[in-house]
Image 1 (tube, rainbow, N blue to C red):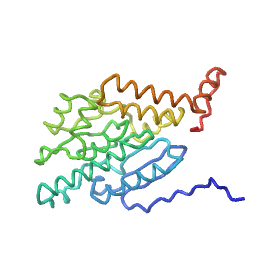
Image 2: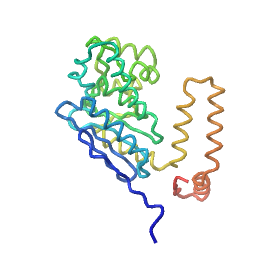
Image 3: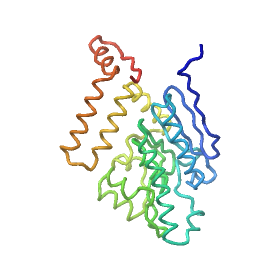
Image 4: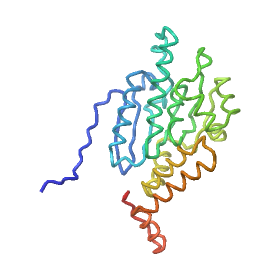
Amino acid sequence: MEDEHEFVLEIPEFEHLSYEVEGGVALVTLRRPEALNALNQELLLELSEVTEVIQQDPEARVVIFTGEGRAFAAGADLTELAKIADAFQGREASLFGQQIFSEIAALPVPTIAAINGYALGGGLELALACDLRVASRTAKLGLPEVGLGLIPGYGGTQRLPRLIGRGRALDLIFTGRHVGAEEALALGLVNRVGEDALEEAKKLAVQILKNAPIALALAKESLVRGEGLDLQEALEIEADLFGFACTTKDMKEGVRAFLEKRAPEFRGE
C-alpha cells in the first residue's frame, strides 16, 4: 500500500548557493567566493527560493546561513548599484532586498548566521535578519554604506538599533567602521565567537535541537509579535501561545520525561 504521507521535497538547482540538511540542521552556503559572496540580484532571488524550500522541509529544524571562502557576504554587488539611475530604482532595489531578508526573519525555525571573514553592508544585514549570529575570531562586521554616499538599505538602519541600541548603532552607521569579533560580541552584535564560525554554529544548533520544535517556533513567534507593543499587549500574546503549547504532545512528553529523569523524545506534535 502506498504511503499516503510520503513527501518529496523539490529543491531547485541553485547557481550561487547550496542547500543541504543533516541531523535536523539545514545549511545554506553562499557561493560567490570570487566576489566575496556579494549579494547580486541572482543570489538574492536564490535566497528567496531557498527560504521557500526551508518552509516546506520537515527535516529543517534549525537553519545556518554561511558563506564560502573568505567572507560571509561583503555587501551588495556594487556593479549593480552603479546602474541605479534615479530615486525610484533605488527605492525598488532597497525594497527588494528588504523583502527577502524579511522572509528569512519570518522563518518559523531558529536561524543562525555563521560569520566567517567579512560581513559588511548587505552581508551584515543578512546576518541581522537571522535570529542568532556566531563569528569567527577573524570576522569583520560593519555597515560602510555612508562611505559610498548611501545608507544601509536592506534593513540595517532598523534591525541594528533594535539589536544593540540606538547609540551603538549610530556609532557603526555614522563611522562606517569595521568591528572585529570580540568588539561585536561586547556590543551584542554577535552571540558567540569561536575559531571556526560554522563549527561553533553547529554546536549551537545541536543545543537548540534538544528542545521541542513547536515550543521553539512559539517562543520565536511570541518574541517577534511582541516587539514594539505595549508590555501588557505583548504579555497577552505570550499567554495565548503558552496556552497553545500546553495542548501539544511534546509538552506532555517534556514534563513526563523530567519527572521520570530521562531525556525527552520530542516529535513536533
